[in-house]
Image (cartoon, rainbow, N blue to C red; front, side):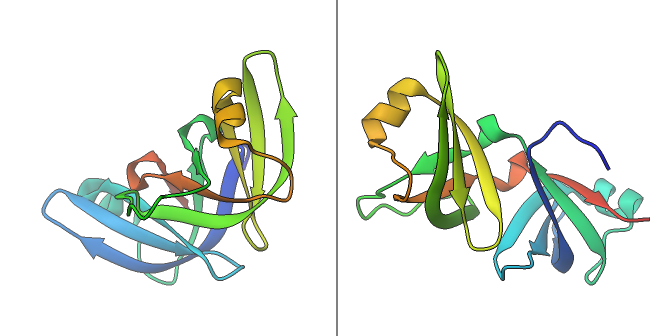
Length: 141
């Protein structure tokens, strides 16, 4: 599969929690972490989403928020992948930040102002945060 989203995570569906309108689909990654996707109940039915199936979770880099310190606050975003900054590519306005989260990487596109405000540097601890609604889910079949 080819897609423009740089964050492409292949794994197994470990849980499907269906509500009246939407569903949460949990995709287990090879490194032991999970990604939660919020999709419509109709999409679950049309795609044939079921536990044990193969899936890909796609997340565009601009949808990823980089957090270095929550100051004791808890976040509502379901996907919070912690790791270390492995690479920074600074552009004229924005920067690409790559976070190694233990066997997977997460690409985030943030403003240079945010890069400086966070004091980001390679090797620094950081968490990639994105909402379940920012995940596009694909299934095999």
